[in-house]
Length: 112
Image 1 (cartoon, helix red, strand yellow):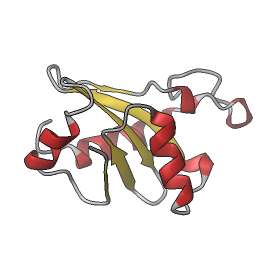
Image 2: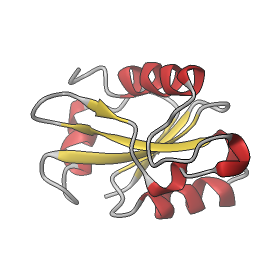
Image 3: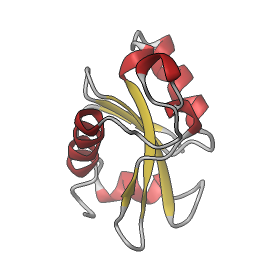
Image 4: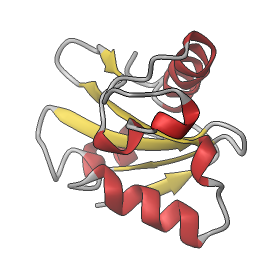
């Protein structure tokens, strides 16, 4: 199940997000609008949905959370953006990475 939020996910919603991958939830966050889409199979699908809703490509970053270790990761093919100085799957810019991490901690505060 895919859920888009501007508020934190409830424990019940997190249970639904686990349907795609039992111990991992993929996320795409619009760091400008503070919107998170989670639970999709491919980051690209979340990115497309947020773009269709008016998000700007430069503000969309992908990653996820390991539900066993509670570790946030910053890894997604949608993060490869040479024109923004990000030549890797990982979010390389420390400000964007910290912003993404802060938002992940907010959206998933029920489990972190």
